[in-house]
Amino acid sequence: MRNTRIFLLFFWFVPFLLSVVAILLHVRSTTLEATFDWPAIGTLVTALSSIFVMLSYFAIQQQATTAQDQLSHSTLAAKTSILLALFKDIEDEREERSVIFLIENNQREGAIDDADPNKKWTEKELKAANTVVARFNTAGFLIVIKLIDRELFLAEWRDNLCRLDSILQHYIARERKKRGPNLWASYDR
Image 1 (spheres, rainbow, N blue to C red):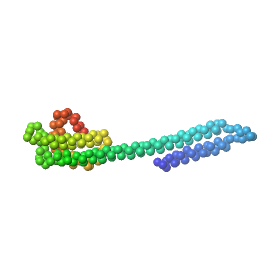
Image 2 (tube, rainbow, N blue to C red):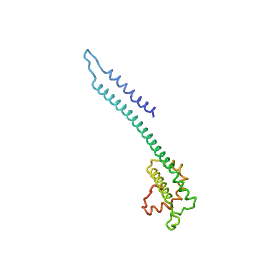
Image 3 (cartoon, one colour):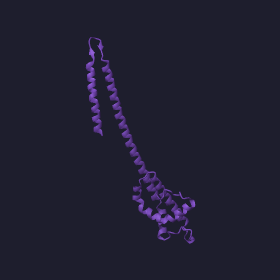
Image 4 (tube, one colour):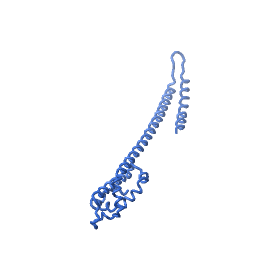
Protein backbone atom coordinates (compact mmCIF):
# COMPACT_ATOMS: atom_id res chain seq x y z
CA MET A 1 0.00 0.00 0.00
CA ARG A 2 2.78 2.42 0.91
CA ASN A 3 4.70 1.53 -2.29
CA THR A 4 1.59 2.26 -4.32
CA ARG A 5 1.32 5.72 -2.80
CA ILE A 6 4.98 6.46 -3.50
CA PHE A 7 4.57 5.27 -7.09
CA LEU A 8 1.47 7.43 -7.60
CA LEU A 9 3.16 10.43 -6.04
CA PHE A 10 6.17 9.94 -8.33
CA PHE A 11 3.87 9.30 -11.29
CA TRP A 12 2.15 12.65 -10.76
CA PHE A 13 5.11 14.67 -9.51
CA VAL A 14 7.50 14.02 -12.44
CA PRO A 15 5.07 15.29 -15.12
CA PHE A 16 4.28 18.26 -12.90
CA LEU A 17 7.97 19.07 -12.57
CA LEU A 18 8.45 18.76 -16.34
CA SER A 19 5.47 21.10 -16.87
CA VAL A 20 6.99 23.70 -14.57
CA VAL A 21 10.32 23.55 -16.40
CA ALA A 22 8.57 23.84 -19.77
CA ILE A 23 6.54 26.81 -18.59
CA LEU A 24 9.59 28.57 -17.20
CA LEU A 25 11.35 28.11 -20.52
CA HIS A 26 8.40 29.75 -22.28
CA VAL A 27 8.72 32.91 -20.28
CA ARG A 28 10.27 35.36 -22.63
CA SER A 29 12.15 38.41 -21.63
CA THR A 30 12.91 40.86 -24.42
CA THR A 31 13.90 43.97 -22.58
CA LEU A 32 13.39 45.13 -19.06
CA GLU A 33 9.78 44.39 -19.50
CA ALA A 34 8.90 40.74 -19.58
CA THR A 35 6.15 39.24 -21.59
CA PHE A 36 4.61 36.16 -20.23
CA ASP A 37 3.03 33.30 -22.02
CA TRP A 38 -0.38 33.47 -20.27
CA PRO A 39 -1.62 30.11 -21.53
CA ALA A 40 1.54 28.57 -20.06
CA ILE A 41 0.89 30.28 -16.73
CA GLY A 42 -2.68 28.94 -16.82
CA THR A 43 -1.28 25.48 -17.41
CA LEU A 44 1.07 25.97 -14.46
CA VAL A 45 -1.81 27.00 -12.18
CA THR A 46 -3.83 23.99 -13.36
CA ALA A 47 -0.89 21.68 -12.72
CA LEU A 48 -0.38 23.16 -9.25
CA SER A 49 -4.08 22.75 -8.49
CA SER A 50 -3.96 19.12 -9.64
CA ILE A 51 -0.96 18.44 -7.41
CA PHE A 52 -2.69 20.13 -4.47
CA VAL A 53 -5.83 18.03 -5.00
CA MET A 54 -3.76 14.85 -5.29
CA LEU A 55 -1.79 15.60 -2.12
CA SER A 56 -5.02 16.46 -0.31
CA TYR A 57 -6.48 13.14 -1.43
CA PHE A 58 -3.49 11.21 -0.04
CA ALA A 59 -3.64 13.12 3.25
CA ILE A 60 -7.38 12.49 3.61
CA GLN A 61 -6.95 8.83 2.68
CA GLN A 62 -4.25 8.48 5.33
CA GLN A 63 -6.46 10.14 7.93
CA ALA A 64 -9.38 7.91 7.03
CA THR A 65 -7.22 4.78 7.28
CA THR A 66 -5.86 5.89 10.64
CA ALA A 67 -9.36 6.69 11.93
CA GLN A 68 -10.65 3.32 10.73
CA ASP A 69 -7.76 1.52 12.47
CA GLN A 70 -8.38 3.43 15.69
CA LEU A 71 -12.10 2.67 15.55
CA SER A 72 -11.40 -1.00 14.95
CA HIS A 73 -9.00 -1.14 17.91
CA SER A 74 -11.37 0.72 20.22
CA THR A 75 -14.27 -1.52 19.21
CA LEU A 76 -12.20 -4.60 19.94
CA ALA A 77 -11.12 -3.13 23.27
CA ALA A 78 -14.73 -2.34 24.19
CA LYS A 79 -15.88 -5.86 23.27
CA THR A 80 -13.04 -7.40 25.26
CA SER A 81 -13.86 -5.20 28.24
CA ILE A 82 -17.54 -6.20 28.09
CA LEU A 83 -16.64 -9.88 27.81
CA LEU A 84 -14.25 -9.69 30.77
CA ALA A 85 -16.84 -7.85 32.87
CA LEU A 86 -19.41 -10.50 32.01
CA PHE A 87 -16.99 -13.30 32.92
CA LYS A 88 -16.32 -11.56 36.23
CA ASP A 89 -20.03 -11.14 36.96
CA ILE A 90 -20.75 -14.77 36.14
CA GLU A 91 -17.80 -15.89 38.22
CA ASP A 92 -19.08 -13.79 41.15
CA GLU A 93 -22.26 -15.85 41.02
CA ARG A 94 -20.44 -19.09 41.75
CA GLU A 95 -22.51 -19.59 44.92
CA GLU A 96 -25.79 -19.35 42.99
CA ARG A 97 -24.57 -21.90 40.45
CA SER A 98 -23.51 -24.18 43.29
CA VAL A 99 -27.05 -24.03 44.71
CA ILE A 100 -28.42 -25.05 41.30
CA PHE A 101 -25.90 -27.88 40.98
CA LEU A 102 -26.95 -29.12 44.43
CA ILE A 103 -30.48 -29.48 43.11
CA GLU A 104 -29.11 -31.77 40.42
CA ASN A 105 -27.02 -33.70 42.94
CA ASN A 106 -30.09 -34.21 45.10
CA GLN A 107 -31.93 -35.50 42.03
CA ARG A 108 -34.57 -32.81 42.25
CA GLU A 109 -34.69 -31.78 38.56
CA GLY A 110 -38.51 -31.87 38.53
CA ALA A 111 -38.88 -30.09 41.86
CA ILE A 112 -40.27 -26.97 40.27
CA ASP A 113 -43.17 -28.92 38.79
CA ASP A 114 -46.50 -27.65 40.17
CA ALA A 115 -47.98 -31.15 40.02
CA ASP A 116 -45.79 -32.23 42.94
CA PRO A 117 -46.13 -29.69 45.79
CA ASN A 118 -43.83 -31.76 48.04
CA LYS A 119 -40.89 -30.98 45.78
CA LYS A 120 -41.08 -27.17 45.74
CA TRP A 121 -37.80 -25.30 45.47
CA THR A 122 -36.70 -23.30 48.46
CA GLU A 123 -36.55 -19.51 48.36
CA LYS A 124 -32.75 -19.73 48.14
CA GLU A 125 -32.98 -22.10 45.16
CA LEU A 126 -35.51 -19.87 43.38
CA LYS A 127 -33.36 -16.78 43.94
CA ALA A 128 -30.26 -18.61 42.68
CA ALA A 129 -32.15 -19.87 39.62
CA ASN A 130 -33.42 -16.38 38.80
CA THR A 131 -29.95 -14.87 39.18
CA VAL A 132 -28.26 -17.50 37.01
CA VAL A 133 -30.88 -17.38 34.25
CA ALA A 134 -30.89 -13.56 34.24
CA ARG A 135 -27.09 -13.43 33.92
CA PHE A 136 -27.00 -15.90 31.03
CA ASN A 137 -29.91 -14.01 29.44
CA THR A 138 -27.71 -10.89 29.55
CA ALA A 139 -24.90 -12.84 27.93
CA GLY A 140 -27.29 -14.04 25.22
CA PHE A 141 -28.40 -10.48 24.54
CA LEU A 142 -24.80 -9.27 24.26
CA ILE A 143 -24.15 -12.10 21.80
CA VAL A 144 -27.25 -11.21 19.75
CA ILE A 145 -26.20 -7.57 19.39
CA LYS A 146 -22.65 -8.74 18.63
CA LEU A 147 -20.95 -7.05 21.57
CA ILE A 148 -19.33 -10.30 22.55
CA ASP A 149 -18.26 -13.21 20.40
CA ARG A 150 -20.46 -16.29 20.80
CA GLU A 151 -17.63 -18.78 20.32
CA LEU A 152 -15.38 -17.07 22.87
CA PHE A 153 -18.19 -17.08 25.41
CA LEU A 154 -19.14 -20.69 24.76
CA ALA A 155 -15.54 -21.84 24.91
CA GLU A 156 -15.54 -20.79 28.56
CA TRP A 157 -19.12 -21.58 29.61
CA ARG A 158 -20.51 -24.29 27.28
CA ASP A 159 -20.29 -27.18 29.78
CA ASN A 160 -21.76 -25.20 32.67
CA LEU A 161 -24.49 -23.77 30.47
CA CYS A 162 -25.60 -27.19 29.23
CA ARG A 163 -25.65 -28.58 32.74
CA LEU A 164 -27.47 -25.57 34.17
CA ASP A 165 -29.99 -25.57 31.33
CA SER A 166 -30.93 -29.20 31.96
CA ILE A 167 -31.61 -28.36 35.63
CA LEU A 168 -33.37 -25.03 35.01
CA GLN A 169 -35.56 -25.85 32.00
CA HIS A 170 -38.62 -26.62 34.18
CA TYR A 171 -38.11 -23.41 36.17
CA ILE A 172 -37.74 -21.32 32.99
CA ALA A 173 -40.85 -22.88 31.42
CA ARG A 174 -42.93 -22.21 34.53
CA GLU A 175 -41.72 -18.61 34.85
CA ARG A 176 -42.41 -17.93 31.17
CA LYS A 177 -45.87 -19.36 31.58
CA LYS A 178 -46.46 -17.08 34.59
CA ARG A 179 -44.70 -13.92 33.43
CA GLY A 180 -44.90 -14.10 29.64
CA PRO A 181 -43.23 -16.01 26.80
CA ASN A 182 -40.66 -13.25 26.17
CA LEU A 183 -39.15 -13.55 29.63
CA TRP A 184 -35.40 -14.15 29.29
CA ALA A 185 -35.78 -14.09 25.50
CA SER A 186 -32.03 -14.07 24.94
CA TYR A 187 -31.30 -16.93 27.34
CA ASP A 188 -31.79 -19.60 24.65
CA ARG A 189 -29.54 -17.93 22.12
